[in-house]
Length: 307
Image (cartoon, rainbow, N blue to C red):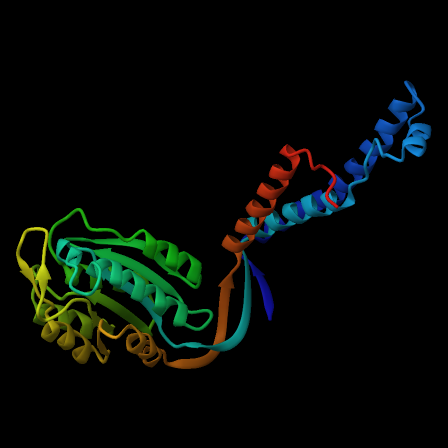
């Protein structure tokens, strides 16, 4: 296990820790000497069993801890270690076209797709890179590849119906491929009702094969279909989604039995033991903000001496 830093120069700010400790004790000594000029506070403290100048060491330690967290966050701290993880990086591409508002799967197709996408994220082993794309007539990158499941789930929460009409799966796959960069093991998890109305299937399959993309498709909707907001019947195109998966070496699933689908996600993960890097910056910053917020609340409630 090894700690790495993207911006190691910021670690020099750790010199602020002994500086603040010195200032803290110096201020206590200075204030006591100043107070003696006006009254004998030491005698009053002994008589009333109170402490006018509290040596609140717990508050000091907590504040220093927050400072250290912020410095390590600025330094871009990451941890590297070997673990069993997936060979692939994944981009979750969710159809956000208007037909995904059809409620033929218990809820709207989009809501179901987002829920299943979160289950897939949670099923992944540690260290897997995940990206999120929403697509309708155009593709929108909501989260670039990152090993943080928290960031991926937050991005999935932001998925909403697209502003541009249409279902442009071709653009979604181009955007996914660009996100992978030079990575060789790349897999797209495509959640859609398959109602392609921009481009054609042969063009998409040629692009997939040319760029070595593994496309796993999840059909969201029923073959019987449901009523859309335009009072038309929208049916899932199972055949098209199957062709994308089978022609790219991926797998095809249908949203039906949620428990069965969740267990099927495991078959998408080809595990290998390799070195993974986990970026801790976001978590360190989040922890520092949380602790600082708690301290601020306690201060404003006049609980300045933490037991």
